Image (cartoon, rainbow over all chains, first blue to last red):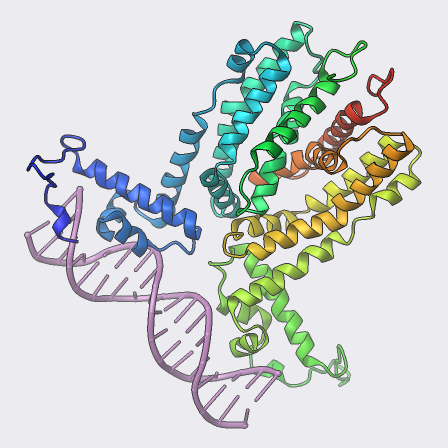
Length: 230
Length: 230
DNA sequence: GTCTATACCCGGATAGAC
DNA sequence: GTCTATCCGGGTATAGAC
């Protein structure tokens, strides 16, 4: 453990320099990585600062210098993950512009959303946040805000625009978005919340999402003489 | 603490006898009550057997004689709560028989379901189960089974019957039930999962559920010439 | 800023009297 | 079956040298 302290060199004797000056930043990142793994595996209370210490390769005192307490470390680590993973989501307006028709655009977007939210690490994180929400209400707020900024908000705008153009008839876009999400990603998400070991079945996911979008369009698609998808 | 051990008597000297012979059963129940409160308040790992000991009024050794370990106590206590509270739900077929029309029946049933699932204690229990699901996968299975037996299963039968009678057109009843639940109770349930402190707004709940049922009926209601509720 | 070593406390579980 | 008293490991956090 003391051996790794000196500057590492590769087999040619060249020093391995990750980011020129700051060894501190690298240690901080090592702490964050180790802490995230431990919190996801054990939950907040059962997670051990000793384990995080050993996995990160730094000393316990260093961790406390950086983060102050177990609670603050938890908040720092968990808060950082969520926005980063949600950033992979392309805005729904983009999907609409690229797709030939509305149904295809909605299916594409909700499928991409599902792919992100159903990733095992995200499901794990979600369970962790839900389980600790009474101890850390901030995380609930954060989760809601990120979800809204990254997904629901843009979808609301999109539905509002389409209604203005007469392509949809959505009286309450905010509620409609909640319905759309609930009917598509919400269904497999609920299943995998309570059955973590079950892998995602691609065919069933596609079927569920397609049916959810059809449900949505049967209500909000242009009504005169329109009886749902062929 | 030692004083309560002898048989309690009221002010007339009459002994207070709760259930003739079995003091053991009463203690067992006291343990369960205290344990449930502690687990719901603290989560599994942070819950203290000492606290449960003090709150239940029995000694720690007695708890271990009855339940063997903290894990088994947790399973026994949490497993017992769920079916008991779900039992309040009247079967959906009953709601259908009593209601003048299908929409009313669906609104009535999903509203009742929401009232049960949104009760603060149930939301608390649900968060607890979700958070500890990697440690206790049995609870996830149990949650799913109870939900299915008490709600989804009967709803599937109902939709199948109505389709056979020609009053609905539901090609996949199992999926349709998931959609119906997701579009109605699922929406406020999700919100309150991440915002525990927010109280349930009755008017908004009614609005959400009504809109969810309308969404469902727009897709699965009799299609020829039917364009949604007036 | 970072380490080693330690203070201090509370966790779950059990032994043995009655 | 139930109690009291205790074991023993591991928890978070910090003091003090470098």
